[in-house]
Figure 1: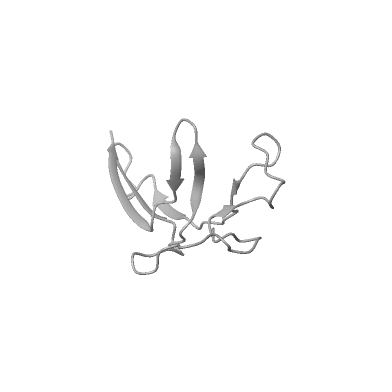
Figure 2: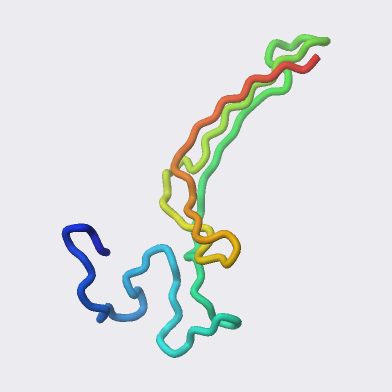
Length: 104
C-alpha cells in the first residue's frame, strides 16, 4: 500500500494480489474487458432496522418510529469500480438514522 511516506517505487508485486485489496484483478494475460474484467471483491454488509407504525397505539392520529443502523460492522468495501458513467464508489461508513412520522 502506498502512503505519503512510503510511495510505490516499482511494480514488481507478485500475482495474485497485485497490491489491491478491494478489487479482484485477473491473472497476467487473461484480462479481457468483455469476458474476464477486473471485478469488485465480494463483501457482506450487516444492516439492521426496527420500527413501529403505531407508536402510541392510537386510532386516528398515528405516530411512526424507525431506527436504522447501516454498515454496522463498519466494513471498508467498494461496490462499483471504474464505471464508465458513474466512476468508482465505496460503501458508506457506519451510519445511524432515526425517523419519526405522523399519519392523520
